[in-house]
Structure formats: C-alpha cells, structure tokens
Image (cartoon, rainbow, N blue to C red; front, side):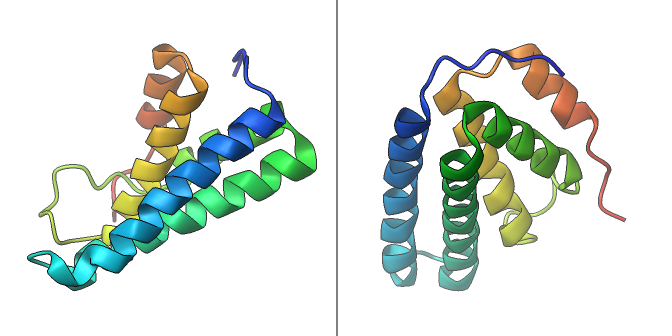
Length: 122
C-alpha cells in the first residue's frame, strides 16, 4: 500500500502526545459520564494506541509507524453498528487509529481500503 507522509517523526510524536493527553483527561472525567466504565475503557484503549504509535515512530520513523497503524487497523474486528456500550476497547483502538490517520493526512482511499480489509466480529 502506497502512502506519502509529510510529517516528521517529531511532529508525529508531538501530535500523538497531544491525543494521549486528551485520552487521559477522558479517563479522569469518566466518572462524570452516564456509563463510566465503558467511557474509561474506551479512553484507556485510545491512550494505549497513541503510546504504542509514538514508540514505533520514535524507534522506526514516519513510514514505519503508518504501516504499523494500518496493519493494526486492518486486524481489528469490524464492530461498527453494535450497541454503544459494547466493545469499548475495540472502538477505542479504532477511534485512536482513525484520529492518527486524520492527523497525518492519510489519503481517504487508503483509509477506505484498510477499513474494507477488516473482518466482522465472529
């Protein structure tokens, strides 16, 4: 899969740290939400994905982190359309990866192809 990355490693890591702080704030405010446990698990899943992506970016560079993110995204089960309170970890990971793709300006066609490669939850 071809993609063009215009951000540097430092810019990617900085963006991921910002997203990670937002997820941390969401973890802290989870008790104030209608469904605290689901909200917390979703935020923690996002936070973990951002941390892992930052590690890969720092160790291997922009192209490697994008490839890693695409492979991780393709490996997630497709749970769109399930009730809001089901599969918060999967939905959190999916949300984090989609945020990452938007941050780096990944081509929508590439995102669609990766999404189509995902298998439905068994």
